[in-house]
Image (cartoon, rainbow, N blue to C red; front, side):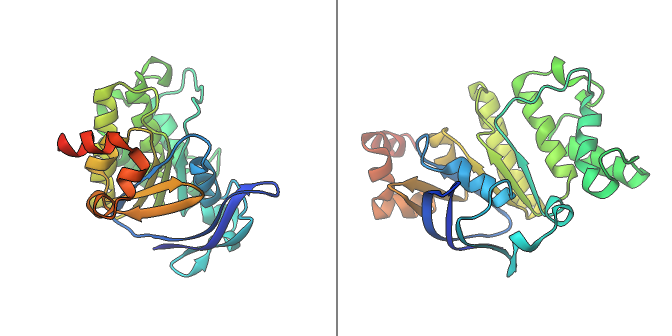
Length: 245
């Protein structure tokens, strides 16, 4: 379990969100919702260790994540970012194999066990038929699955995703979100992803984190609807979403 205790996140000395007290439990897909600039990416980058907390702590099973070495952290948290990373001429299997670098070193040779883990990760996201294809020949949806397989091959208990459905068409968005939910439940990992695909998040996530007015409100779609928080966040759009269920 991850516990955020009085956490303040931001850049430099500028706080974006303060006094965050939340928990993340294994086996659940948590979707992070909010408008641009409210701090969603900042939260994810802080949890990944790219940014240091301005105050407070991030605890994993009671242990402060900031106390972990880079090697330990890379075996604990993996992250898939929105930015399109160009990797021309690299095969999918080789990209996914890079997820094993915390265990082999960046230029380390994959063992038989490593190759088996890579194959399982590729199969898990449903792109076994693409293993020998180069990344630059993939569609956006296929490419996203390849980077997710890399995160799975890293074998971390925590996976963070920053807008993994950005730039995807409707069917690819739906497929990606369903895959996240399946992986969270079947692998018992903590999966936290930010998204602007609100309606899909309402339907498929286990827990929602809604960032608004400098606060994070959490709960299931049902509980946030009952409390009125979802209506406050979405306005009249919430009504139409609920009637379409």
